[in-house]
Each structure stands twice: as structure tokens, then as C-alpha cells.
Image 1 (cartoon, one colour):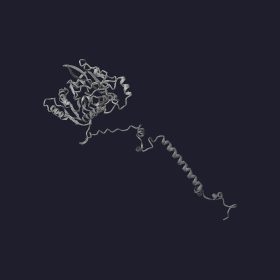
Image 2 (spheres, one colour; image 1 turned 45 degrees about the vertical axis):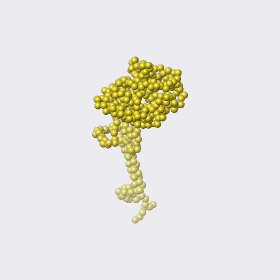
Image 3 (cartoon, one colour; image 1 turned 135 degrees about the horizontal axis):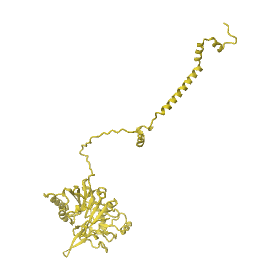
Image 4 (cartoon, helix red, strand yellow; image 1 turned 60 degrees about the vertical axis):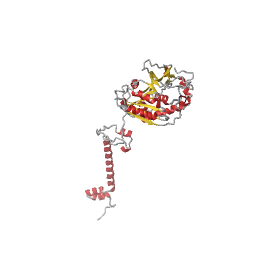
Length: 416
């Protein structure tokens, strides 16, 4: 077979091939296949991008990129802020606790109100004792006549550092009263607490009323009061009535009278009676003035305290410290309105009625110098610092057993 002149070319060869063979040869060429593949890939990618963009306009994800277990409370709240969370109310049955070692105390119903008797409010009467045997019978004779319902009254006594027969006499008198078969005589309960504090101040007038003894003595009494308070007060008590052992006379209605002075149940206050005592001279009853611990602060007293060591306890009623304070004993007249009130900055401890919540709030009798006062005067300072009201009744008289005062305590100053 003769070849064309000039050799064989694609053009000449194609001219000789049948048409379908030419197409087949074209489709099987490498460059053609690569071009087709690349074109298809570009088309697919374009369609994918276009489809995703359109779908993202209709659908999107909302929320934190963190796992819910890793999210903070604020992030969780922000994440769910747009949601309407379904709420399922599952009303559980009461949970019953069957354990003899678990108890509950609800102080919410415990109130101190002027209507104490109708409301059945419980009263705790507290009396610290040291070498008190001679006064105990008189004490119970007066307590016996208190008109506040005895079944709402609990008694508690602290006996400590005694050299006489206080414990035996107290136990005997308590038994006498509590064994009374007459209705409304016996008290709801009685508790005797024994605690010695190592008090070394003698109980004679010269020693216990001397100026040098006042700081240690008042601190020791404050400690005794606190031990008595925290050992005896129960959740059900609405009132705490501090009553000294050596009261000679007092109104039978003293609890109701004092409770009636409540002005604001939200602002508990301390109501104090001026403590005087009967003194007879030549057969005539002389109104002795005894208690210098109930007073109103003065500018002179404030200036004095600024120069005192913080650990110094001011003993009121002594010439060593001229405070210029006004004593409540200088104001009272038992013939005038017994309900007249004055605000006080210091109080004595012979007769005090306190709302129990005042003590529950941490107001006690400091056995240290608190604003240069201790025991009952420190108690008044602490109560006022806590915004409680401290008041006195200058015309409501509680009579103290006659006692000799150490002469010259006030120097040339007069208490009244």
C-alpha cells in the first residue's frame, strides 16, 4: 500500500477513519478527560457553596460553644434566656424524719408583746446567788404573790462561791413553793445551776462596796449572769426577768406592768425600775437612795472616757471618777405617774425585764470592759450599740432590803 507523500498526519488519518472512531479517539484522550474532570469538580463545588449559603439564611445554631457541663451559671442563664422553659410541678409528699437524734426549733412564733398573758408568753426569772441564805425566804414570799400566771413562768438560779447554806435553803424553799397543792401557785419549772468562779471579794459592806473591788466584782457578776442565762434560757421563752435576791418589796403586778410599756415589738427594749430601799430612822420611813448604776450619760462622762484606758471599768457612784452623769434616783417620786419613762445609758441589776430576743441577739453582761463599763452597765451600753432601747421608770419603785452603804463613796458630790 502506498503512503501519501509527506507521511501520515492526524488530519489525513482522521479523514480515513469512520466518524464514530474519530469521536471515540477524542473522548479517550488524556487532556480531554482531565478537562472534563476539572470542569465537573468546579461545578460541584460551586453548587455546594451556593446551596449552603442559601440554607444558612434559613437555619442557624444558637448557644455557647461550651458543653453545658462546662458552662457557668451566668452563661447557662444567658444561653437559655430566649427559651420558654417548660415547668413541671411535682408536688412532693412531706418528708418524714424518723430519728431520735434530730430535732427542730421554730423561733418564728416566739414574740414579746404587751399582750403577753393572753398570748401565753413564757417568762424566765433569773436570780444569781452568793451567800444569800438570809434573803431567800423573803424572796419566795414575794415571788409567790406575782400575778403573772405561774404556769407560764420558769425559775432558774445560779449558786456559786458560797460560804453559807444558800444551796440547802434555796432547795428547801423551792420545794415548799412547788409542792403547793393550791391552784396556780407552783411555777412551770425550777432549775438550780451550780458554778464557782473563784470570787475572792468578801460580802461585807466594806469590801464589796469598796472602789478597788468594783472592777473585779462587776466582771465576776457579769460572768455569773451569763452562765445563768445561757444555761437556763429555752427557745420558748419570750421574756427574761432578772430579779436580785435582796428585794424587800415590789408590786405583785410588776411583770404585767413592765410588759405594758412595750412601744414597738420590732425594737426590743429594756425597762428598768429605780431601786430604792426602806430605811427607818427614829421610827420614820426614810426613802434611801441606793442605786447609782441607772444613769444618763453626760458630756463630762464622755470626755472622761476618751482619756481612760480601754480596759478600765468605770465604777459609777465613787469619788474617784467624777462623771457628771444624771442618776435616775434623783428623778423619781413614787407618788407620781408610775408609767413615766426616761431613756437611760446605764442600768442597775436589781430588777430588769428584757425581751428574750435581745439576749438571743448576743446582748449579754460583759465580764470585761465594754466602753469602760461592765456587767449591767456594760449590758446597757451593748444594747444601745445594737440599737435596742434602754429605758427607766423613775416613778415605779422596787424596794431594796435596807443595807448600809460604804461612807464617802461620792465624796462631796450628791446623787440627788
